[in-house]
Image 1 (cartoon, rainbow, N blue to C red):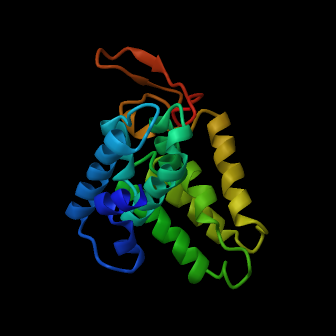
Image 2 (image 1 turned 90 degrees about the vertical axis):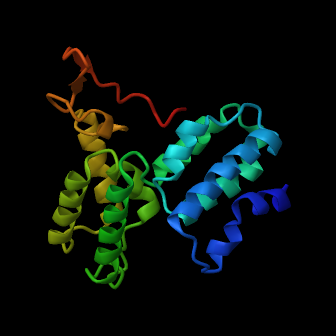
Length: 208
């Protein structure tokens, strides 16, 4: 199984620093999804559109990590599609790829150049990427800026971000798939194609 997966996705190439073009990365992700559906021993097929879209919002290395984990856990999952999407969301795939990359680079800057690593309180990306992707990138960057401006008063930046985002979610100002609701009249809902108000459902947790 490992051999077949390696042939389909070649995750070891990126782990060794070998360059993979964006076009080739997308092709490898799609081939690996198809391989799992045919040979992965899954209880249910992966929904190609849903999983492919989310995986391609991540870096190739991140997508590879998730698909390699699926090799071990896949046969035990009743809903492998939901599992993959949940893993992608934790890495920031709720929003746009460009937004995720900007959030990631900003976190890296504050850690390395903003003094957080030196002070022993670096932001833990894996814990904040998902929550921060539940708002538009501009809002997420504003939150990170606020953190940076007050970093001397904040002892746990990661906990501060998670708490901040939880508060926004409780207020209906953050939630998964915000980018689908560009016509929203307020954060708590959006308009359908006929202009009728629809209540946002933030209770749906990562397709679980």
